[in-house]
Structures are given as C-alpha cells and as structure tokens.
View (spheres, rainbow, N blue to C red):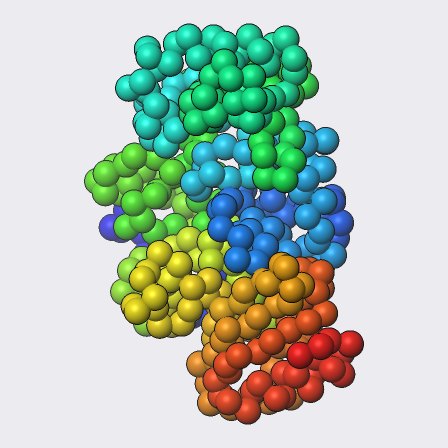
Length: 411
C-alpha cells in the first residue's frame, strides 16, 4: 500500500464530494424520496431527545424537499420497507439489508448489543417472563409493556426489559408506535415471508457486508475511526482491511491539501469524486446533531475547518453554544450554529441563539437563512418564533424582516 501514490485533491473537492455523497444535492420528494434518501445514506441514526423533532426526522428533513413524519411512519409500520436496529447506534435501515442484520440478531454474544449486554446476566432469571411475553404476543398480537403491566402478571419495567431483549435478538419487531409507546409482534408476522426466510450470511459475509456498508455511508474512510465497519476492530485490523482493499483495487487513497491524514475512497465513487469540481447551489441546512455528515467529527475539523461538539451532555456551565446546538451548513461551508427549542404547549419555536462564524452577512446568505428558518418552522407546525440572541447582533432584526417578507410569522 505504501507504493500506491494517493490521489491529490483540494479541501473544496473533498467537501463537495461529501456534500453530494451525503445526499444534500438530490431533490428527493415525498415518501419515495424518503426511502431513496435512507438507501443512499445506508442508515439514519435515531435518538430519543426531542427538543425539536428527533434526530432522524431532522436528517430526513434536510434531504427531502417536502418531508413529513408520516412518510417515515408509513415506510416503517405499513410498507415495511425499512426497519429499526443497531447500525450506527440505533438506526433506520433499508429492509433489503435485513438478512445480514438477522445474523447479528441471532448471534448477539458476538457483538455489542446494548439491550443484550444489560440483560444477558439476568436471562435465566427472566426465563419465565420471556416465555410469558412471547405466549401473550402469540395469542393476542402486538402488545406494549403497558398491557403487561395492566394485567399485573409481570411488572412494567420487567416487561420493557424483556421486550427490548427479544427485539435485540430478533424474535420481536416493532409493529407500530402510539404516542411514543412501542408495540411489538413476532418477527415472522411483521415481515413478509420472503424477507424472514431469506438465507442468512456467514460470519465472514456479515463482516464484509458491514465494512462495505460503512464505507459507502461515510464516503471518506478514516482508519483512525474506532467505529470502523461498526465492528469491534483494533487499529491494526482496520489498517489491514484497508490495505487489502487497496491491493484489490476496490479502494484508493486520497491526499487532501492541508490535511496530514490520508483518507480512502471506494473505487465505485471515483467518478463522483472527479465530478465534485462542478458548481453547486449554496443552500442553507440546519444539521441534526447526529447527522450522517457529522459522524466523524475529526474529519469535519480537518476538511471543513469547523469544530463541532454536541453539548447536550455537558453541564450548563460548560456549554459554549447551547443545549441542542445544530451546525449551519451553507453550500460547502459550516458558517455557524443554531440552538432551537420547540415550546409545544405554546406552539412557538424559541431560537436561543443563531451564531455566525463571520461578522457580516450579505443579501444572498440572508435570503437562504430566512428560507431555511421558514421551512424549519413549517416543519414544526408553528408560525410563532422568538429569536433570543444572534451573532452578529444586527442579524436578529434582519432575520425577522426576512421571515415577515416570506410569510406571516409572529415574533
């Protein structure tokens, strides 16, 4: 691998490649566009925090022109074209990948599955509860932990642990959700027979599949990343895998101007990288804290010259930008941060802060910020907004004027 000369590219080319690879340029529309976005991204990470819409909803909102939460609900619980499982943490995954993940479900001891790790030591003690839960679901159809608690044959917390364990091991899947309450049913009743009965892969086939999926999802491959392939791999193993793929002509190294680390790109993405010099329209996107583009934050720092940390787990005194701070992407540049909070009871969006890196802004940027904020408000079904702080200070009044020009928004 040392003898293969890396392809030299500029930071701007690398940025354009990533923006395109991460599906910010496609004009996806409707439910079909939502499905295509998930397929292109490989998976979309879920997170329970709901300061505004949850992470996975924000990720899809950034990529689907007319995205509505019902699009994903239909794909998950009616069409069964995507499913939930561990990938980049808990994620939404295309159903065509199910057979590979089913291998992991049936071999949980080989992988780090959070629910399994927490509960496996109790499995013998929970044997009766597990049998009861499976029997009740087999008899009565989809059930949530609440139904078990109401019948008082099993405590609600125990039922939740058992349901999570059986989901982790692939015996149950989420049938539907009501008011954030998950209803589970037997996997063979949730999915079509042709999906459930599909021949499963071997351990080696699963490993190769996950590495390929990871590389396709990230676009630029970094052997320093401990999440490489979403597998437990040592640094030496990661380097060996990349070396072999380069020698097999499936992967090639790239040297980015001003970046010491050598990155790698799949050979199948070569044309996309080569065409990344083409001009692209400069649109503003408010990125979810766990957006796919942000998964490798060291890469974001090296290539985009932007340092980002999600401050939700920091104590208030140590927060610099805000609790639910979202990076602002403008074309191929990160230009600032947004810290929003939805007041659901008052039906009002509170912008705690909107901070730009630069001291000045022009009309084009103002128009794009206004359009994106308008779309963000509409996505959250509110026409009321309170902007607490901006940087520069004059941005606040300019944004309010722009929103008033674009529609009837109350401040």
